[in-house]
Length: 74
Image (cartoon, rainbow, N blue to C red; front, side, top):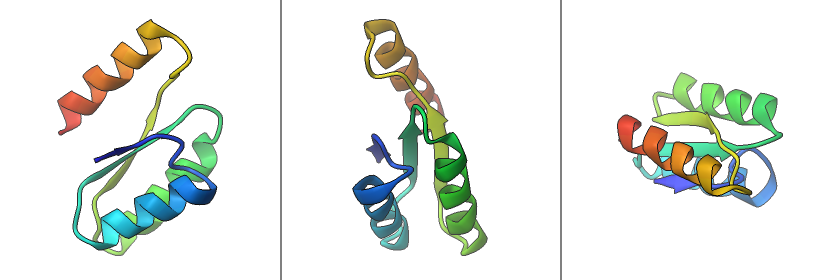
């Protein structure tokens, strides 16, 4: 599952909830890299599957690159 804006606030809660439910979660961030990586590292330390991905959703090229990376990791 890909969660956009997953590093902070509601996105982080969604990432956490799905990871705890056993989903493989990809946590997209643009400016909240430290938060997203910290969140995913914490979840992985609990044996859960969460990976932080940088992605710029404001451009078509950025969206395509994000989806390509997400597909590669899926």
